[in-house]
Amino acid sequence: MTSIADGSVKIQTTPESNLSTPSWFGEVVVISTYLRTQGVFKKINEQVRFARKRFGQYEVIDFLAVLFGYAISGERTLEEFYQRLQPFAVPFMALFDRDRLPSRSALSRFLAALTQAPVEALRTLFLDDLLARPLTPDKQTGGLVDRKGAPWTVFDIDGTREAARQRALPQTDELPPPFRRLDEVCAPGYRGRKRGETARTRTTVSQAHSYQWVGTFGNRGNGHYREELRKGLAAIGRYLAPHQLSPERTLLRLDGLYGNGAVLAEVAGFAFVTRGKDYHLLDHPSVSARLHLPPDQIQQRPESQMERSLYDCPEIPVGSDGVSCRVLVATHPAGKKKSPIGVTRAGVVYELFFTNLPQQAFTARDVVELYLHRGAFEPVLSDEDQEIDPDRWCSHSAWGQECWQLVSQWVWNLRLELGHQLTPEPLRMTEFAPPLPPPPPHAAPASGYAPPEVGSAWKAGRFSGQDFALQPDGTVRCPAGSALLPHEQRREADGSLRVVYGASIRSCRPCPLREQCQWNGSTTAKPRQVSVLLHPLVVGSDPLLWRDWSRRHQRQACLHLHRQRLDIQMGPVLPPTPIVSPPTISRAQRAHYRLSWDERLARNAREAQAGQLTFKLFGIPESFAIWLGLIAV
Image 1 (cartoon, rainbow, N blue to C red):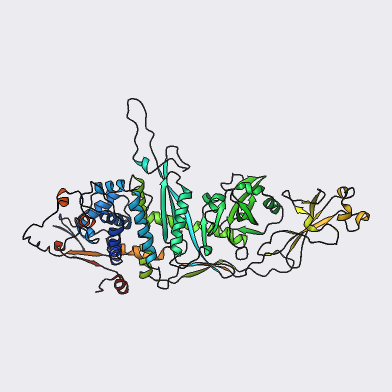
Image 2 (image 1 turned 90 degrees about the vertical axis):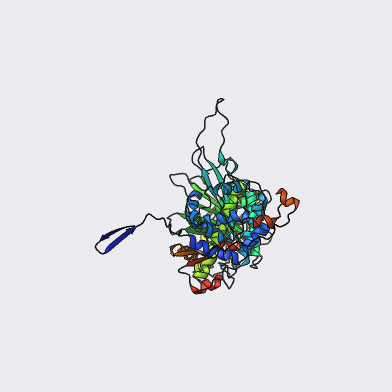
């Protein structure tokens, strides 16, 4: 030992090695203890079974223990994780009631050999564990309250892509065929970068109020979004049942990838809002005619100067199945650069939004704001990348990568659950949209307009307004086939907007139907006029309320355990029990080819003679230690 004294500071060094405990080990202790008390390890041993050669004495729980620790640690690579863990391998595996730590090569072989059956069993257990315990004692889930006071539960469904850049490899007769390790897990995908990139897509499902993950479904390349959506809907259905929530009151916020009629037919049992991509609906007669009338509302985001004019078109058939949908068209002037979203026609950018939310509870602006609020999902994905990064390459096989991503989401949910116990907080209430004020006389309504109506009958025996139909080109067609053009707009006292259309006198004078059309028959000298009325839409006046918890506070409370000190003490190893006589074994046991599941599991189980391990973790509140099942000192 050497010592250096300099004034009031004394520095001592020693050549003896005494490695510090990894900062994340304390959280591993807490989470593993909680999983053991909840019986999760036992359920994994009973439900997630996978027999494969070249695993030595290890079982599924041994490899999942490594993946749980890797997800909790936040280490950049498995190599770095193993380097930090290796000196503490015995106490780490003891937390999972196991003996030896699997090597990196054994873990790699396990992930490469995984098949669909054990991963799907793990997915089922992951969702069962999420639903087994409510996030708070009062079983609150958060929600959205519409303008008529009805509650809704919002789920976000979106996908992420992870690119794997590849070098160009020469292909000649003198060289063997090229082989890439990520061919089984990646495929060419749309990343907008270099042509040599391949990608893997991961569709995620999140509860938008509690920020819990409900599922993850990965595939090669651009994925199979229809198949992944169906799996996500099944997971949401399982989430709703124990919470006694109705699918009709469940709002799905979908990415524009799902904005076509074929997909909307699959989510018809839920409420939904998505960006549409069937731009041919702009040519639908009802939509085209509505676009020639004044907009329902003007929408502007606080962080943007761009204003969108919103047109609400209810009951528009979408797709080949004719799904009746509420189509919202948002328009704004085109800029100098091509708009990345929407379609541009005659200097105007048109965006489509599809929903089946009722007009009486959500205005057009409310629907668009709800969809754009999907931007709050991006910080969640960013937090996930910083804390766990589930898109990192953990395996070169598809099901091995899927297993790692399931464990990552499991750790995220556990941190939320434990964080709510460490620092419990009530639901916060946010005014998502202010209440609708009563419109002053002769002013535009704040709620938008009901579908346009042509003026009613005005004299018996004459053509009524219903005989004049709005046309896609913005005109009104009379029974004789002539066009009536708009020439006047005036606001009524109740807020209705009257648009007056008039015919040409040159068309009315020689018209053979003049006797049935004009007020005074053939003696009139004025052309026929028709009014189109836009009545105010009847919408509840209550504000939109959003109830949720803080996105980070609960998880950060759990991550603060990384700053606390952890002492590990190992008791003396007990002498083994002497064996009086060797046990009798069967021929199957002697041949080593049909061990039972219990026998396989017992091979790496921690023995009672291994000695007692004592973990002393500082900074744990007494109430949390009692809730966790630990003895508070």
